[in-house]
Length: 264
Length: 233
Image (cartoon, rainbow over all chains, first blue to last red; front, side, top):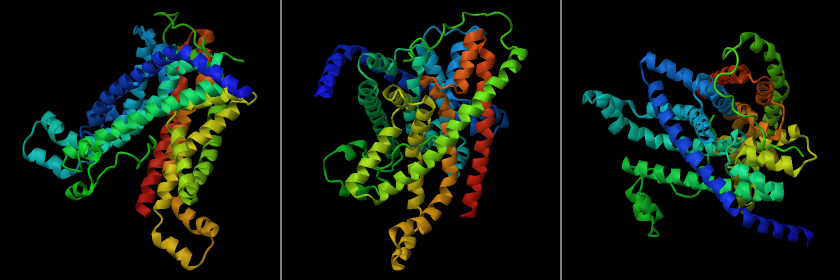
């Protein structure tokens, strides 16, 4: 009964701690989403450069990608935190430091995904844009990128979960994120209750939400290319059979199926 | 118990004394950082990879041979470990088992975390073994153990090696997370040198370059191996 009493006490502590913990969680969500947005912009720019036939674009992009993939996230975090100020660029908030480190690191990984999916768009599509003498922005925006986008979403979803997991280390530059608040909770309760019971489960649920969101994006992207059903068709309780036969080929299911793999 | 909140000293304000990069200082601290790299970072990577490679295979086989409800439990447990931060997992064991050596916690957490990734690689490898092979072992009335040991695993493993190598590299680049449980791995040593001397640039840059120098050639090798295996098939 001793253990049960203790757990009850912990839950009472948790109630007092609730708002702080929630603030920390919101900060982690912001860190993940803003970091992911920056990473995506970097990934698209570097990915397009790395996929270009022009050596003057491809060369620098490859160097940048390999550099940020090869040095570790924590090294980059410290570099932004300690070394950038020496170049006169002092970042006021730890949040910005975290966003930049996460964005640059995972942006470099994402660039590989973008480049790989650009090259998997069939060459006939590229040739057709030349035959129609489309301008470069026009063909990328309207022809190539929409097709590459559907291909790159699964890898980007994996990277998004990696980014969320990586964001747990940013508290060491002085950010009161979820992991930091868990540490505070751990001091008044114990490690199993704070980190394992509250922390891991909350991170896991958020990661699940992110992966399911990315799966919805993938279904939408595929539908817009004329492959597979719409999100509404998948979510509706109506019988699936006629729809499935109306859309031969891939019919991604919303639940189950692939789980996030690695970044390689 | 060691507290972790006041981890870092204040950010250096603007210009500290001397140039940004001092070669003499860099040469002076290089051996210390390299020692930490060999003694801790590489050690954790090697031991973690061995644990992950074995445990990953066990998980992949369990998911395949266990009855459905149990297999689902194992699969979701693996998903749970894979989708939660290594940092938090390290901290759970660090504060949960205070008697345990932090380095040992590093082996366990990195081993188990990456085992869940590697189990997916093995799963794909096992699925790539043609159905005819399974049927043939049945026709020859081989025992289940013999089927796995002598027929399925040797064929499944071949195609998995490059992916396993890539995960080993990922693990290698994740080892700085050991910072949070105060293991003296390379980045922590570099940060400590910075804190003592107020010169962070050299120490942290050297640590980053050592990572790059170790991981990039390995990644190239694995890439070549991957192409060669694809060609052989």
